[in-house]
Image (cartoon, rainbow, N blue to C red; front, side, top):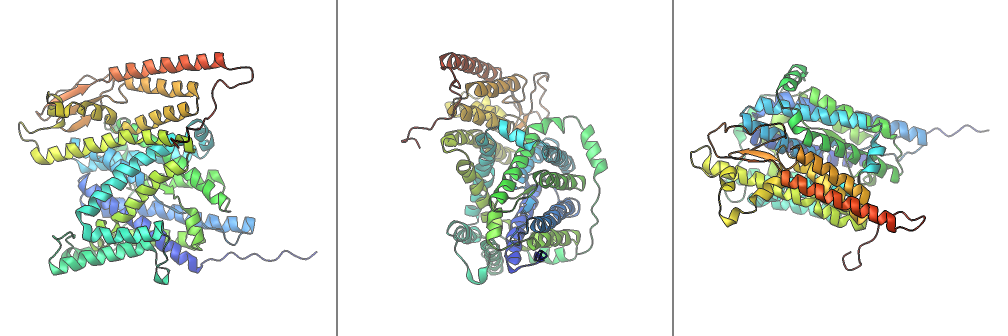
Amino acid sequence: MSEAQPFRYPIWTRGDLDGFFGLMVDNLVQVLLIVALCTTVAGMPQDFIFKRMLPGVAISLVIGNVFYGLQAHWVARRDRNAGCTALPFGINTPSVIAYAFFVMGPVYRASGDYNLAWQAGLLACLVSGVIEFGGAFFAERLRRVTPRAALLGVLAAVGITFIAADFAFRIYTRPLVGLLPLMFLLLAYFAHYKFPFKLPGGFLAILFGTVIAWGMTALGWEWFGGVKMSGAALGESLKKFGWITPVFCGPEILAALQAKGLLLNFLTVSIPMGVLNLLGSLQNIESAEAGGDRFSTAPSLAVNGIGTIAAGLFGSCFPTTIYIGHPGWKALGARAGYSILNGVFFTAIFLLGLGSFIGALIPIEAGAAIVWYIGIIITAQAFQATPREHAPAVAVSLFPALAAILVITLGNYLFVAGGNAAGAPTLASLLHSDNPLVEYLPGLLALTGANSAWIVVTLLITAVAAALIDRRYTAAAIWCGVAAVLTALGVLHAYWLDGNVIHELFLWQPVKAAATGTATFAYRAFPIAIGYGLATLLLIGVALRSRRAAGPGESAGETRVSLPTAVQ
């Protein structure tokens, strides 16, 4: 018997270079996004971000990228699959948006302490990491009991509002820096156009956006739809070149755990985002298997969780994830090298103090089109990857997010317009007005809720809608009943306003006196809880009637039905 032919899996291929550029640009934009949001939303100094947060990002990226690269080598040899492509891995965009806007931002606005906002972000990141790691062992069961439309609907809601819409506003605020990169992205990813020398569209978008920004600054035309860049800041950033040792944040995390309400108040954000990250990674592993690369689920998910936990322990507030798009990297010819190089690259950049150089060199507007595209793809996937008849349920998921972005934007604008001046208009003072133009503001605030409870509201109402489309009346009643209980407890829809700041108002909490001397407003949401309760009773009645009407061997209407052709 002849011996088996020796198997060789390449350490590096030409496709790895293309894959590296794509993954590197994607993660680079996330870093620019982190710097932009942490400085503007959470009030953090840039030096703090570069010295305390980005080293944690580096550690999380190198853990995951190196593991998934080595895993590809092992799987390739096991299956004798020379075309095996490593799972793409990086910073989770929806979590960056969610934790900056809905955890760190509210803490900073309420306290004025960026350090406390950072600690709240660390706790949220750790909660997500624990869920991702622990969920590696029961993710399949969780996915079976939760409609895909509900899971992807939450991501779609974040994607179309706080990612795509927010960055569309940025692009059209600085159009000469943003629009040309946007067209590069559309050509590359919508039209699948092949640029000369196989240059990635994302790389060209950032390159041309950066060149335009610096060129207009040099000509003194940055006011004409451009971005003001600073040569002095760029030179100063180079002086910060030098080794930065990652710092273990155990004392800060312990202090944050002891701070009243800093963990519990934001579980409505961190728990759903952790679950969504877990299940999204699971789906991406399945996508890779459909493309011919079969990775073990539990270790793949567990290392994703370990990367997120490591991020939180060493200063980063932002979870990592297994990226969507494995077939795309595979089509580029990337194997394992692109993943390992990506981890090594960012570790070197951030631990050598070059993060500030990148931030000074590349304006966030140059990468805004990439983040916009990510938001669009997340939203599109929610409609494409769910059963066709569940599309209306996904559409339902968008309403709480639309309310949230309106409330947050309006609150910010009112604060800028009036600040803390006596008599300045605020959200709370508008609620005391009898002007018919603000009649429905209470509905916007109730849908948004405190501590970004709208994320949980989105999950629940989308699950109810999906269950009803499938005529699963009992499941719909359970989801609706959960909404009723959580609302009665004050977890959902209830809020207490102090000026423009939205605080939680749980059932056991008294209404507090205003801390700033501004107008206040409290809403317990009991009418909404009663409404959910009555709806639950109705659904229970429908479920019982359906069972009685079902014939022998039938499933009492608990089967999926298609929408009329005209609606589809």
